[in-house]
Length: 365
Image (cartoon, rainbow, N blue to C red; front, top):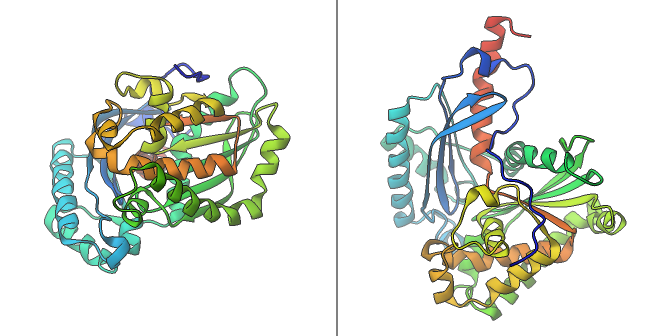
């Protein structure tokens, strides 16, 4: 078993802005967030609770919306049908819950596709869902919002408080980077961000047929590594890691299926358990050993692994290659693992959109 320096698992209750008054005013209001990505369609339904929210319902389905996009520049007919079927299931759940606020977004696949706007118009017509395409920067801000409590928890632990964090989100069609400044309580402020044109779907398609092999893995690392250079040139992250390594002043924070899968391997879990993954802190050595363990598996081993399975088997090597390139460029001593992302940030946004006018009407402080 690997040597993660894990924090105690806690229920996920992301922080809301102080003094917003929502939980006091309408504790039973229901809100929803929908994230249509390049690979997955995800829905989260929750209600305010204290300074966070309680999850009432969730949905996730692999739809591979970006399949074929790399070659054609357009969304494939079969991929669109899969996505609409999943979105129809989401619409049925939303109809049952009747949320007072919904945030629904699409990311890289719909940004890049020549027929992305046409597809979303069809989605609205057939499902009633009004989905908005967001920018890479908005993706970064949502990820920061949802992961901020993990940074605060780390700052409150033993030892010197970290002063910087590099957040990365390995998606289906792109990978987002955010270089963060942390105050004494671990609250992040954005220094800079970037969107890399590689994700698990794009790499899988570029390396079709070999992406689940050792040679394919190495080729994907080589392809990804140079894409990190411009961000490093601007922010000198590697130097800050070297200078603060002994005190652990710089953290990596990863939010993606790739990172959570690697954490499950590092923890030697017989099956995936979110309560043990979200907020876990892995040493660099533990993360490297998990990468080595993963890269030793063949296609059959990936499919049969209880923490991977057939849906993730094709994409876990491309994601691991992106992670390996990030860890090679920025070898921070610790990695925070986040099993949370855009959905949680979107749910917070939906709540806040309702809070501000409500607080004004109620004259809350």
